[in-house]
Length: 370
Image (cartoon, rainbow, N blue to C red):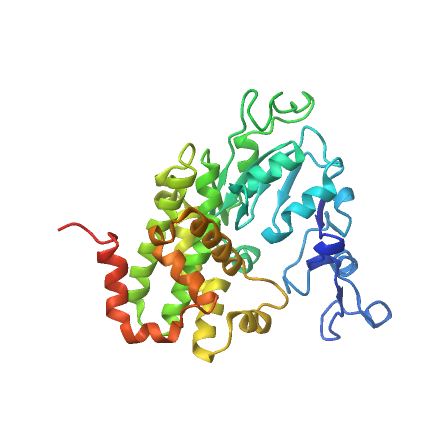
């Protein structure tokens, strides 16, 4: 069995398609092979490591990196989407027609798909564009810790329809009988490890939204840490953020989203805690305040070419809320977007710190009764 990793092409250049110069200090450096820059895919296949984005972590020999999207999916019965969410539509366009009709997918994408027509989950977007079912995976899973095999847990949501639906009027193409059934038990078997525990649920909306919206809250937590307001204030902001995440799910995905997903699963409160303490959105927001630099500048300096998903999601969610006239219903989400857009100065929040916290917790109904 060969697992294939791929990057996009054309306007979707990212990760594996770029040129990379392997450092002479790398233990696998061979002057005859690595004296000049090479495609990162070639380096990965040669040394079984991604030295730019996951340095020092050995990849299994059956993992093959390819820059060709159609080649990567052509014989795959299970597709895992783990890409920045701004690339999803173009990637789906490139592989449409190359996927097996009975393939199934899991989206690890941290974002929501906002368009003039409304808002949807990327798992649904992938499913509609490719004509296959797509579930979701999210949890407290900082990549470097998972790669180092430190203990973590995650949540997979998988609940394919059993008959015709609006998106699949003729139903899903069945998996051939000679292949294993693609069900919840199979996905747990594929992902579960002694150091990576998996819970499988049916709430695709809750799992997807937990992974997307927590990045907005993590930015707020980073601003709080940058201002040195303290752990108590950050905990208050995290609590308000969790309430807004749950409210967003119930308001816009009421048919399927379950409140308990946000409070009981790794994709909810656990991922929020991790992201507000050790995630890249928190780090860049905190450094932006401390250095006085824009968050985009900090992103360029700190993330080795990778992009924050929280800033994109915050702006996209705000566009949707503003069009609905609902910005005041989500004050934390709205405040983060206004800070990112330069409409509010985060450094001035410290001048009205107590009134700001009181406004969030009491005046807006986020406080406890009594």
